[in-house]
Length: 414
Ligand code: PEP
Ligand code: MN
Image: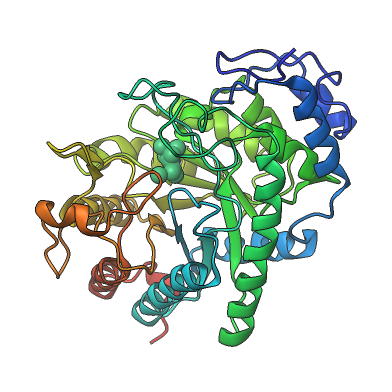
């Protein structure tokens, strides 16, 4: 018995998930969980889950509730959301310097958007929990198990390092707790409430941190493009959670499917509950997004729409580095805002992968970073991030779009 395996397996009800809330255990019964590691030892997994279940929650339900209130303002067109940070946080980079650099970038960009829009911007980091990664292929080109994040195993390229180790979930918990200290310190210094978020992918970590119906591993949790099977375990978990939640939507999403998600995840049509994160790619966004926005609006779901211009615009260079060009990212943002303007819908904000560190992972921007420069400081554990300057370039671009045409005409005071 290995708990969850790489080949999606079904839950057998509360037996494998002893110790979690009974209502949640019932709704997970028989559900398939995609993208889970193949733990070598089921007993060790259960021990770790039991330990996590005894630990205090990482965030407070009150703060989660405040975030829902802030996101309700976004849903109603009276605020914007800026969500961003590392693609994959690592244990090695869980340093106050790195965390502060990322938070600084988040807050700088938020200020630019605030000044341009005249609207408050809600800052949400991809921080203090973004340790698990979904992968398109279980085995990489090097023949090793694909890296699924520091919460599962080490990124080092050996078979030994890639063996999943459930005790790393306890390290992730401790690192998230430490990171939250830096988040709170930054919040206090800047007098801004900063919220945390991550993809709630690894169920052995997330489930024991569900307390009284709240997922208390972070304030905002999202479901990724690869785990949004309507009948899957992740959807079952998210229906149960009282948090504000996100759902990534790639170019394959169809209007009827998105309506079914909205009905399942936001049955009460509560502003701030559901954020739909569009990641269509620069070439597809103006074609694929409009019917989704129209269908959701017609059904009366007051969702937050968010633009992730990163995940549909990734390519691999001849030398094998994953990268993104600033111009493609900018093009998706332009297309996204054009769609919402056309439909008189509130554009909501942005979901970005960035770091305040001086990395060379994405191409272009004002500094015109070139392909031959990528190896200089290519430090990401997963997807390429905008560096601090490129992030501000993007924020300025959004500011120009907002100044050309306000986010919401009725929100403008004359
Ligand atoms: C991510 O946000 O890092 C990610 C994997 O995104 P998506 O699920 O949209 O591919
Ligand atoms: Mn990513």
